[in-house]
Amino acid sequence: MPTVVFNDISYIVPEGSRISDLPPYKESAALPCGGHGKCGKCKVTAKGMLSPLSATEREGLTSDEIESGVRLACCTTVCGDCVICTLDARTSARIRIAGDMPEISLHPAFSAYGVCVDIGTTTLAARLYNGEGTLLAEAGGLNPQSAYGADVISRIEAALKGEAHELAMSIRRAIDALLTELTRAAGIAPNAIDGMVITGNTVMLHLLTETSVEPLSHAPFAAERLFGEVLTAGELALTALSPDAEIYLPPCAAAFVGADITTALLASGICGQQGTALLVDIGTNGEMALWHDGRLTFCSTAAGPAFEGADISMGMGGKEGAIDSVCLVNGSLYAHVIGNIAPAGICGSGVVDTVACLLDTEQLDETGYLEDDPAMIAEPVSITQEDIRAVQLAKSAIHAGIRTLLHRAGIAPEAVGTLAIAGGFGSYLNTDNACKIGLLPAEMRPAIRVIGNAALAGAAMVLLSRDLREQCARCATGEVAELSTDPVFADEYMERMLF
Ligand code: FES
Image (tube, rainbow, N blue to C red; front, side):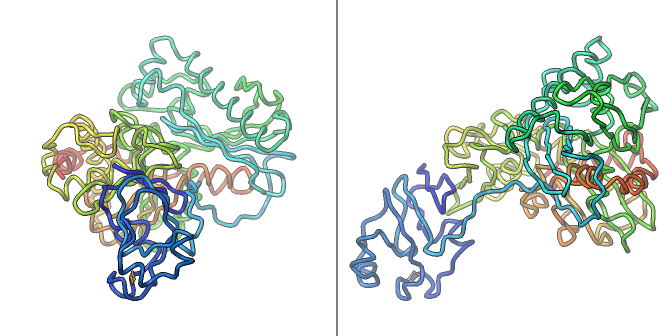
């Protein structure tokens, strides 16, 4: 299928698509005459393999326009690779949403430069700030501990088998590398950083600090340490910083509800607000918090890494070359690729869209049976039957977790005023498709608010204002719902496996 670079973004499109039918055109411009070639309002500049100039176009365009490659989008079809630009092209380069951050009063937990880091089970993200609260650089990468297992359970097992020190050192080296990358981008020396905040789920913080994970490995799943404490770079063996640089680890709520949820709650601002709100962080470990009647209830559900691009045969993170959104054009899959390059794989948001499209075309049935295995998305990227099974497990874990929390509180999905979706994956999530495939309850669609990497945003807030540590601690206080023994969760989990 041809590659179309539309306003600087690459798309794989079916040959024969009319330019005006391409989703990026539809999103940015209208067809005042209904696409009949009469109004001349759908002009674009287009170069490459396109249908020849039609008589209608010759009538509607000046010779100068024709010479400079102007075409009518409603009269031109894509025959091969081409470059298209709307005349009022708005720069639409993709910017990763790093998480909404409310305004705060500055009282930094550092004097010169400070860094906040979110250790996700699969990915890492970090930001560098100066003392005026200016964001100087952002960096991200994969959590190298993935080599020891994709999820927290396998990491715990690896630590118990004697790999705890190596697990700790691998994440510390990765943080050191992020610090080097950030400071290089900002043109400062790494040891100019004298304050850090590191958030992450409870297991990640245990592994970072080489704290025993043994109590996390069996019922009643207690945590040796719930953090909310200050360490030094020397204690964490972070060599890029001076050894006495201060590192704050925000508090966790429980064994499987970590500091990432606490800082995400802080950034979301839902604690203390009127009404009922739910925060869901869709990661390898799906953590959620319900704010209802002035109290927090937490739970966590093992979703697996499918939505982070792992566990999927051609999965990858949301970076250049990843298909991050897919829709249907004339009944065929139409993929958007991050960056102007050929597709190399698919990230979580693309997976959700692909499944929704395959359901629409009935190539996938409600049991998750894939008619043609694998189903091609855009050469050479496809999705397999096994991938679909991983998606089913992940989406039913999240969906069932949400319904179980609501059931325990005795509230209907419609009663939730805000459903805040956190996590890097959530940033690009097509929420209609998330509801269509049953990742999120469809009744909650109007309440959905995507807040990006809120865990990192909350860590940045605590970094930039020491005063928020107390508020952060309140976000770690609440009841923890144990799902593994809850019969409602078991029933919901089975039911939500279907599409
Ligand atoms: S939409 Fe009117 S000419 Fe194309």
